[in-house]
Structures are given as structure tokens and as C-alpha cells.
Image 1 (cartoon, helix red, strand yellow):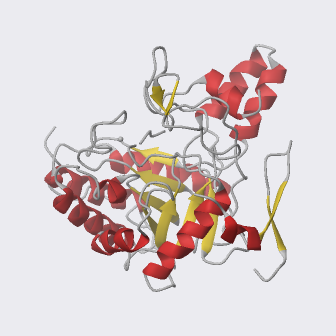
Image 2 (cartoon, helix red, strand yellow):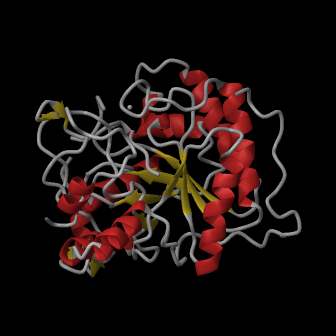
Length: 357
């Protein structure tokens, strides 16, 4: 997984300003079912000191209905500035379609630095009054040897990392997407799955104990784990009952209606009350056909994709807390073909393609 830094009425997903998409809610139940089933120093002894020990935590702020944080320090914003200064105004305007939208910030810093990384993002968010969305992405083995390898060297380091991550929250509202791919990979032949689920459950507990975090466990996408009962089983082991919900389609391209239908079925398998969010950052044209494209996996930097519905926390959809841009559009999925940048690196040409040319 690459990182980054009802009742007959019609529900409209707000798309980027150059297009509009309106979908009857009833159509959400008719969506068809390639994403990614085949598809990706010593630890600190204790939590580091809070960035502001005098800040007191207020009540948790729900994600649903919240104003989302637009990061002025994002790579897309930097690209817009650079092109404006160079007089490339037409290209800058295209990338502005990305930079003006709230996108998640992926936290991948090592254990000794993660508190500062979380604090810096939440400080910027507090200045705007927006809800930041962070992605915790450091579990050992990460995407099981695919293009986004890395993460903590072992479970001990990861537990320390989580506590330092939580220390950076420091009483401020935040939404955290926990470990893309980790839960569905536990159903693959990924080493250490028993420990992985225990680490995920610990992550949910630690983040919720911060008092102000909304926590969503990543649950893959509709074309990966098709048996929702099986998925629900591992979600329970990973702590879903303590979390605020689960996340779907992170860094993938599956259409929103298909994700909503799938998410409701997963929720039903969990008892019918569990809520979820959907990553719509790059699903405007759906997934590429087949399992490979130009010699690389179809889920990795496929050509011809487009930005999806703009982020919103007012979806009007049953059990859907938000449509989010969790993957940062324009950042690579990995060096899946010759000449492609490593995972998480800004790729101008791909960003322009996503933005419509």
C-alpha cells in the first residue's frame, strides 16, 4: 500500500469543480463488483512528553459534520506555488484542484520523531480550525513486502511508536486511519498475522485513550476480501468494537457506490451499527481493467484515472461518516514500472493526469 506523506431521493457527491456526479441512493445497491486482492535506533522506552502539558483535552469531536483540514504545507500546494512563480499558471490551476482539498497526512516517522510529526500537523490544523486526518502507517512488515515496505522493526518498537504518536495528539481533535492494508493482509499469507492483529487492537486502545481521536481501522476494499463475515471476524480481533469505524478504498480506485454497498454489508456482519469512511481521492474513473497495466500491477499508478468526489463529512448516506481523500493525489503508489517514483513521492505528471490533463 503506498503512503504519502435513502428512500428514492437523489444524493449528490460533490466532485471537483469541473464536473458533477449525482447518484440515486437506490443505485448504490446495484453496484457491480480489480483492486488489490493479490495486491503491499532502539524503541523509546516510554511515551515522550506532551507537546503542551497545559493543554486540556475537550470532548471528542465526531468526524461526521466536521470541517476538514486543508494542509497549506502539502506537496500539491508547494507545486502550485512553484508553478505560479514560474508563470506556468494553466498547470498551476490544474494542481490547485488537488491542493485546495483536505487530504490526509501520512505519519511514517521513526519512533523518536513521531510525536513531533503528529504535533506539527495538529498545530497547523488548529490554526485553521479544521479536523486533521492522519494515517498511522508503521506496523511491522507494513504491506507484506510489496512496494511500500518498511515500518517498525518489531512489535516492541511499534507499541512504543503508537504511544509516542498518541502523545502528539495532546488533547486536540483528530481522525486517525489505522494501518492501511493491515487487516485484509491478515487473511493473506503474511507472516506474523497473530501479532499483527494484537498490535492493531493495541493501536485502537492507545489512540482512543487519547480522549480526542476518532479512530477508523482500514478494511481494504470490495474486491479484496469478498467474504464480509470473514473480514468482520478479523476486524473484531483488531479492535473494531473499540474503534469509531473502518475505512475503505484507501489508495484504491473502486467506485464510491460499490464501496458504500460493501461497507454496509461489512457493517451488517458486525451487527449493523458500525460506521465507515471511503477514500474517494482517485476513484473518479474507477479501476483499471485487468490485473496488470504496462507490466505493473493494475492498482499501482494506473494511467487514465481521475480525482473522485470531493471530501465531505456530510454525506447523507446511511452509516457513512465521510468521503475522504486519504491517499494524497499525485503521490506515487511505488516504483512499479521503470522510471516511476518510489511510494509516497510526489509525481507531477501523474498529478496532472488525475486532475484532468
